[in-house]
Structures are given as structure tokens and as C-alpha cells.
Image 1 (cartoon, one colour):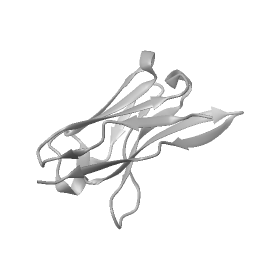
Image 2 (cartoon, helix red, strand yellow):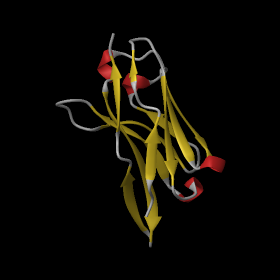
Image 3 (cartoon, one colour):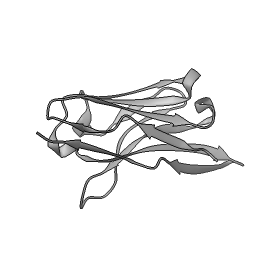
Length: 119
């Protein structure tokens, strides 16, 4: 099992920044891929960005240039730095991890964190 604990969410004005943290209960070097999804009211959950074990990072087009994913292996933590936030970025943000368990890729989710961008 992998437990994911998110922190750093909150309320910010448009144009502001937030940094989300996702701390894993296991070494993230044992995790195949980690990243972030979000779900806005009335919308489906969508992938925001991911980082693989090998360090490859991808983002959804709408956040490229504004959001940055990074990781600290020593702290078993992945970060999502969000800048120039827009009201449309308001959503519950979920940390995600996929890890091989007995050769089967298993998905794990954080509890979700509400980010609200509003003036």
C-alpha cells in the first residue's frame, strides 16, 4: 500500500501562486509514476501533470508554462508549483501514484485538496 498525503492547498487571488506537496509513505523511487489530477465542479477528473520514475515530466496543455512538477527523493515528496493561477484552475487536486505490486500496476490516490482561485 502507498499512502499519499497532500498539503499546501488554499485560497488565492487570480495571478497568485500555490505549491502543493504530496508525501508518499514509501520511497518514491519504487513508484513508477506520480502526479496530479484535478476535478472542477461539474467536470470530470483530468490529469494535470505526471513525473515518471525516470524523471520524464508531462503536463496538460492548459497548464504548460505555469505549473511545474518536481520531486525530492530524500523526502519522498512530489510538488506541484502553480503560478499565474486563474479562476478556471479552481478544483480539488488529487495526488496520484502508480506502483508495481506483484507485477501488477496499482493506482493510489491522495485524499484531495481544494484549491480556490477567487478575488
